[in-house]
Length: 62
Image (tube, rainbow, N blue to C red; front, top):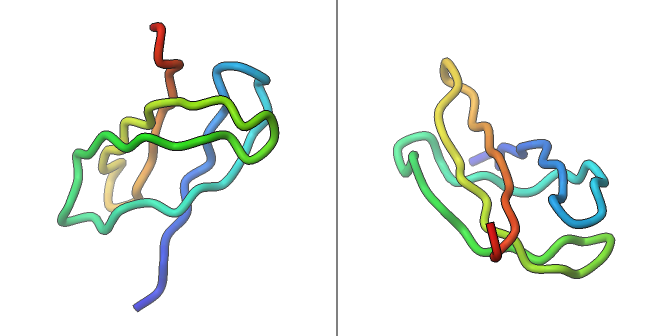
């Protein structure tokens, strides 16, 4: 099984990173994730975008 990745913009450092996305049948989903660049925590809201997993990140204080 191939893992899909979603491009996410970190809400703290604004760097674009690719994170492993949940399987389509598990969407929508919210996951805690630490930025790979600045290590700040965020919540990623994953959703199905026409058969492609996509996501948006927000900081914990948002």
